[in-house]
Length: 553
Ligand code: GLU
Image 1 (cartoon, rainbow, N blue to C red):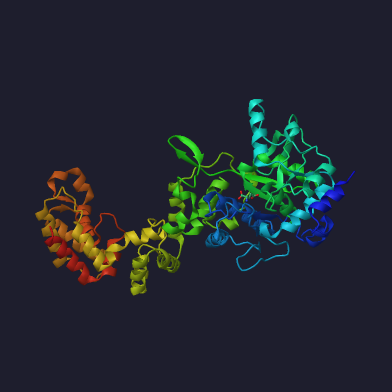
Image 2 (cartoon, helix red, strand yellow; image 1 turned 135 degrees about the vertical axis):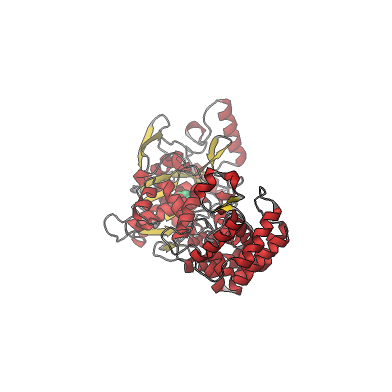
């Protein structure tokens, strides 16, 4: 009778190392007490999902705040789903958010002593562990064809039992070693399955770092651990990698909760101490009254590139995500007058468990606060960098006269309550058209939105009078006094109180008359401080716009 040892040798003759060798090559990390080793382990199957950014941010923060290591592992074992180059894109996008890893896979080569950090380059490591599991009788080659598996599934359906390769349905589980050797020698294709000792009627318990104790049905399925292409499945690969990369907290999406018993079972079979698991809640969306996961196909905001394209400061999205992660974060921001989430003490235990609803209004709120606090020079540099990549015409406008653009950004900026109407760089583009003559002409051609309750002739007279007689090149107060005088001449109430007491006695209020100037100069009835705008436009432009808009009425 042949032994498991012989079977292992027949299957993997090229593997000469042992688990002990790997233990030596990847020793325990020399880190201070409490330092956590976390990772982000995406599959290169497309763009960076907003939920993945959420997970990676949390892993990053846990490592940073504990003085540990955050590393990146590329899980590229599902070759059918792999999209060429997407691993590198993921790294670029994380970098745009400042989530840079200390160690791990880089397009230019790995960094760190626990690699390779790309699963497809770790075949021999997986095989070394599998060879040992075979020796111990805890893994076996399975010779079922896809048709055999279909037949098993059909029987299970007929018997109304759970699908899967387990118990009496695990056809090749109980073959003798001799039978296996014979089939291998005959060239029968095989995969390797893990031999579960679990009992489906029993429960398995584990403590999740976010959710506390979780109790689930024990796993009794003999899952595939090595596919026919020589690559491992996720279940097995992450167990091996997180062990040898010395991860201390596996923070991953909550969709992995149901398979955790499989993973814990494997850690036990290998006599390895399992890291802690923290299952991160999914980000949800309200769709016709129902909560559902943000979907790659349906929601543009499911891809982080959406926020970058729109010109959100990456930090704004992270701050928003942190407010979802720990609900006390927003309070902390207000109390500390800071949006630097790195200074906030994040806690896995305080993490909310209900999948948070993605709330664009809330993101806009944080984004506006962040841009308002940002020095004008930084806003300029970031807007310029964004425009260079995403909006050529805007970039051209900025660079044709950067000093002028800087002045525009300085409007209502250096004061205790700075303006808060820019959430993203594309808002700056949209809200600054009127500072540029060609764009202002387009606004004029479309027709200016003067308040229709006023006779056109009155608006016209006022505009001409203002153009000719208001004070130019003076401070705000003096200028406004001259506006008041002209308004009074045209029977606009200069006292709000008097106007309110008897509105019909006047042509309109003082703010109505100021609005004429605003509309004539900016093409909107909402703008920041008019005097600052006039200062930037210059007297000649102001005068000519007042006149031109009167002519067009
Ligand atoms: N590659 C897996 C995924 O993208 C990783 C899960 C994990 O972090 O362990 O879902």
